[in-house]
Length: 472
Length: 133
Image (tube, rainbow over all chains, first blue to last red):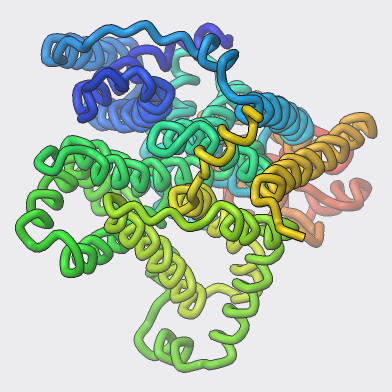
């Protein structure tokens, strides 16, 4: 079964990897150092691509089957050949990570061993939760896996997955997770619970991989490993991943988008290739959860303000064009899904002018939500409230001019998203306490990897001091 | 005494490693204890029980659901999860009906009152019923 699972992912992932390599701008001798980062992007992009293509085949052929599987795989093979022939040849340079590790300073080796130890414990934790709770949390079985079962078992009536008959299951929610699960079940021929667990595992540990590899690539391996250690200490993220919430894949795609913004600022000025990938990742955010729409809006607003303060309108427009090109195919698919197939969202449908205004003018709601936000923040951060500022004090703030705009933009995106979540709670038609209790932690966890990434991008790493002292 | 920045950095790094190690180890231990206690996973249990009813349901689109349990909404959702793509609706107006009742001795009284026959008993409390003609 594991072999079949891998086989079903090979073609979409390989396609995505070739696409990422083709669009990768830093085609220099350091290109090999980006291999872990490229692979992390590729797997995430591949999973997103697989769900979109699967859904399009459902729409075209009205059911999963042999013919739709053939068409799907022919599509990947065509793209693979296309990207293979379009790719430029790279300078080949021998890269031996083991040799680099052996000759690295002791401090790096200590960090690496600690990182691997805690990673293995995190994997064990994930697997134990999966044994105890194979169907996942309420959202996992009542929404995502439920939808996957309707798509897989429904045959030519797969569209019943979006029926308002079971409106409590939020049939308007997008399909990245259910479509991926259903697609693999289709290849396996049965709806085993191992597949949702495997998808959740991939996204949980891909988030760690992309965080560590991006910081190692852009800053230093110390940054990457330390960030990974800090991040894995937030065990709620691993726990939520194991309970198969879609918030974890959302967190991955949000982080990937932000990383690509930094990579764009690091690269040559006239090349916007990273922004094509950023557009795709942002699109996959919207294909994962409805919060993706808020994320896109936040990004577009933040980009405008960043342009006013830094780059100017000409560069803003060329960047926006590249981003929109990457976003466009998924946006079209999502628009079709929302307009043609699914009922309106419960939060939107539950609004009326009078009731919404009443909620907006109710100060007690603001106080209650504000207190909940503060409480949840401290509940998640806990002991690290001392350690993280200590890092800043000791390591110092890294002001790299090249990342001034991406720092500004990323922080603004996260603040706008947080404001958006705050507003949603103010106007929610559901019981406020219930809504906060059942969702606030997950929303914070969506932003957590990006917050840690931005934190470590802002952190100095005194390489000179450590190297000199260690050699004494 | 001059504060050696390098020592401070080493202390903070070790602290981060220890905090992360402590968090993950503690949670691993809790989960391990849960496995040892053989705590049953309710979703799997009801998925199997309700799922068995599919063998007795023809190609129908909807089945009714009735329960006198306090958290009956959750069990309705579980029935829906198990029986997808058949819709499970919270009313008695369907040809087939799932009854999940606290006191199984009262099932006969219920079936007589609503002209229903028992097709299958999935567990002590869960019955599949059909409207008599």
